[in-house]
Length: 476
Image 1 (cartoon, rainbow, N blue to C red):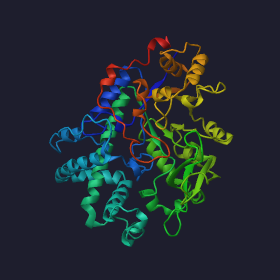
Image 2 (image 1 turned 90 degrees about the vertical axis):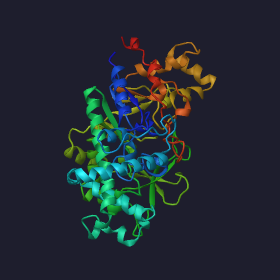
Image 3 (image 1 turned 180 degrees about the horizontal axis):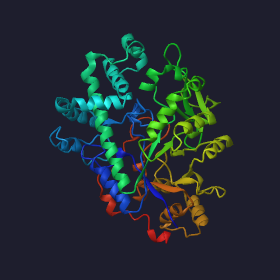
Image 4 (image 1 turned 180 degrees about the vertical axis):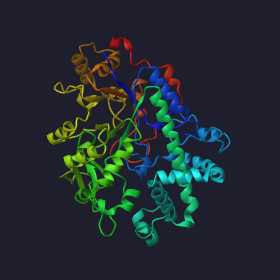
């Protein structure tokens, strides 16, 4: 049996010398481990700047990278700073505020040395990446306005680029610092990608369907979103009650103005998809069903119960996307309470979908296919072992009967083997699942904001000596 296996692990969850996983040595060591153990894929969470609650799914910019992922050790090797002593190296939870303040101090020193000798490099980077000046300006303007949302800024900042085509000179240094962070982050990420390709590892990145309201896309493209003349949202995104939550999920994200987008050929959205796909081998589109039907909740609601479904751009969007990017590799996150048209849209463009075993194992009618990517669960689920521990005796006996094995202490191992051997295009386990970690390792609780979401982190790489899955004799 030829199994195509991968591991889902956020960059932030890798061990790191400075309180968080980053684009440095830990990435390379992890890629080596994947290659040595015959894995083919590394799936990450979105790499963009973190949003409210440090969520990677509500970013301030779709094209920028999170500066906390910059490796200070690699910056030191560039000769821009002295080697930085370890900081919270052995932590098992990321303190994003602490990491951000710590790294910005060191990166500020690196920036000043860089600009003395390499300012022309930064100028070239801005020329090749025109989006970066807008993003950097947004970040500086936000700081100048006490970190308020852009729609609460002073007038001179609110509509700045309507009357100017260059950032203000008085903020040149602060803006160049943000650009410098993006230069470093992109340089380091591209190096990680080249190394992964050399080792035979394909990288799957994640794209949220929506952008964050308090971000550069909404600030500069208000006509592309359902934003009122008062610069406030009058409806927001989310999903209705489903398997994750009986009250639905109120994301608060801005809704696209698809009628206006259609007039521009969906340029803003298509450029976003194309750019993110260029950063990886496969791009997983989160909340794929919204291209068919998207859920709209009146602004001000406290839950997602009172929303309605509206028709999305469907084939019109994808025809234009593939016209511009004919070789793009996408994965459809086709989860939730779906109508048949969602699957028809997925299949029309031959997109692989997802099969979540924690949702399906008790339904004898549901079986995976070789056009699906099989997961025990995603970052939004319990870890597989946490899920197993929360099963009652009746549920465990049902699984044992379904798999034709005794109900004993080895049942978890049998479940792991079953998932590994299911028909699939590829099978992706969270790393937490193959090191048999309970829900102390869970990454996210949908419908909640803040700690402990997104904070789980490996202390070190000792798991490499403990992992026993997969047993490759299964596939002989």
